[in-house]
Length: 417
Ligand SMILES: Cc1cc2nc3c(=O)[nH]c(=O)nc-3n(C[C@H](O)[C@H](O)[C@H](O)COP(=O)(O)OP(=O)(O)OC[C@H]3O[C@@H](n4cnc5c(N)ncnc54)[C@H](O)[C@@H]3O)c2cc1C
Image (cartoon, rainbow, N blue to C red; front, side):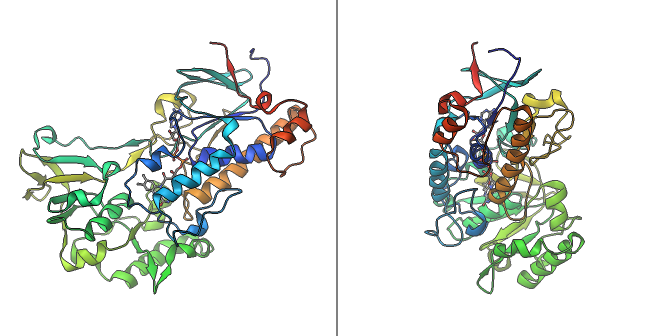
């Protein structure tokens, strides 16, 4: 295949963001191939702990063309998310190539070329949807290697029962840390500490029994300047003064942190009650380890059996994309959610912005934005003719439109390597 002319799109990553884009491209009869490094969809969800439920309301856990099942109640179980993504991917099966970890990306005169261990692929448009949380971030504390206890990342939390009878220190109480603490608070760990620099912006999962996240659409109607105060007031009304329990406030309000730093709200489901009852104790920032203890900033040392580091994730896009000048200093895309890339037209990012309604909703919005823009550009180049936009993405439509088989249209085509 030459570089003279390419059409269609390659999507890197068959997570919910990549699948939503593929779905919307197919609806517009745009040829698309999704390259997924794993052998199946939903691997990030399968590897998360079995107790996990979505912290967003079921209403916002839909993707374009598919509603979430109501079987689990308001907050959907991890396994249900996996099944949902399997079903969603099933409809796109002809367009997904598994086992295609993308190692390198190149710009060509005609679009983009990507390299996997199993071949190279070219297309006019490239959509990067590899997720914000590809890699767990682990701090490098002095003495960590000689600590005789166990140190794990929150990504490896696993079955909560394994912590029964153990002294557990959780480092960090952001979204993941609070999730871990919620689960620990309902089980039988011998001791639970949480090591904090400052407390999170934390909201109740329900207010008077009503799931707070269902109001996300309403909150978005408020002027942005008012949201920090609104959420601080909600936190206060639900929990009172958490400083009394050692949770110092961050200098930024919760909404500002979400928008500017990508840190989402923590959602309480047992943690705060355990904090107030003294079952969970706040301790100072972790600064190092001895063989037997964890050292804290205030000079105190505590003996823990397990340290769970809820210290965040990173996208890990640098090695693939640093040469295109499309990443900010933190390694996230400058245009994270389907906005056009000025200097790199036809390169798109999906799934890297935080939205109050959650990632599913954001993925849908972003997919529509990207697919509309690509459809426009394909129309201009005359690649996709006579397409009725908004029709279902059936293989037969492709044949009718272009007189070719679905496979033929499933560009990006592999280049002979
Ligand atoms: C513990 C935890 C709980 C969460 N809970 C919620 C929640 O309740 N609600 C919510 O909205 N969000 C939640 N999130 C955020 C969650 O990650 C997103 O909702 C969602 O998984 C993001 O989907 P995505 O498609 O953008 O990325 P991912 O799900 O990470 O999918 C990216 C895909 O790209 C593939 N990939 C990566 N690199 C390459 C490469 N180089 N080549 C080929 N393929 C590649 C990966 O294998 C993966 O399949 C949670 C995150 C964590 C860590």
